[in-house]
Length: 427
Image (cartoon, rainbow, N blue to C red):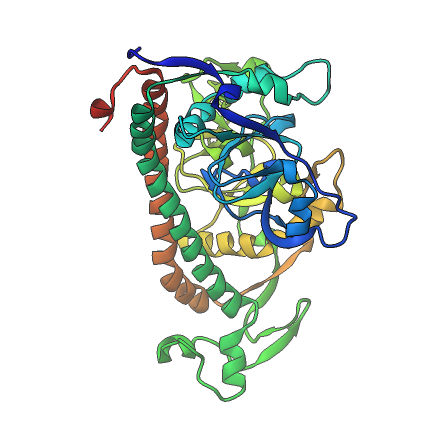
């Protein structure tokens, strides 16, 4: 290790703060502009400025000892989300499941962030035992050790890693914009039926050339879904693609990491292949293989956080049960079903929530056969694909680039944090 590195504890770095939830029953505590951070908000972003809920100034004042400034490091310290790390992008308040460090100027907040982001397993191991829910209290959290180089080197290391994260974040924002564009077009054509309504009213459909506008009918007909464009059909969601469930794996099926294929569960769909990933050499069948570009739908889990459509970008793997591989006859149909699942997400989440037990819910094949959707004509479907294919492909290219950058970052991270390689070598 390089010279002049110093062994300290987290408590040595600055003020440690445990969050607190304002009284939700008190009117006026919520609904303001101060972010209220919970572990569910810690969704992979390096920095958080927006959250599911916001506090008013009165709400923040009611827990003023838990207000933390921009730049503070937040770490989830209870339950299954333990070990998540994020930087406060602005002044905020956290709930009691999060401990934060307001880092002194003698240290780099970003370096501390990167150091803690590699230590999820260690943080979980330090949690107090004897409880069904693991907890790392403020005292034990403050005693966690950390090794730091001189401040200039901390900042240099953080700058190298931060450049990679900045590009990943730029890709994430670009993809959010691209996805919004595609979803808006899907909503206009297949939910609101804007081109059909325009033609019915004798107006020219907005934003469509003459050839594309001609593909849409100028009338509606009755269906089990209600009025839908003439010539289009109301069909079960289940009939829009082939839905192949993943395989069930037992502990004895798993082997050493890197041998066989990674088992792709919901965690991998969200966060990629990592230390938590199980590996398996068992032949589960060709239909249980998932590869880059495949569409998957997670149909079981916590309804609000697990039921979702994913475009897999992590290479060849074995799909775990509770996840469908969604197989379409054409690429155009795959893109349509992908955006259809995104549009239907609130409906499917509510379906799962109504059957929720012990925190888990699910969408069954029977549910998918009951849920009717509007299927356009093949000509309109082809026109939709011509419009969304560049958006879809660019977003997926960004995703692949971000995965490559994340792999590079994760390879450099432990080597830089331990002093194994120097900044010039990393650059």
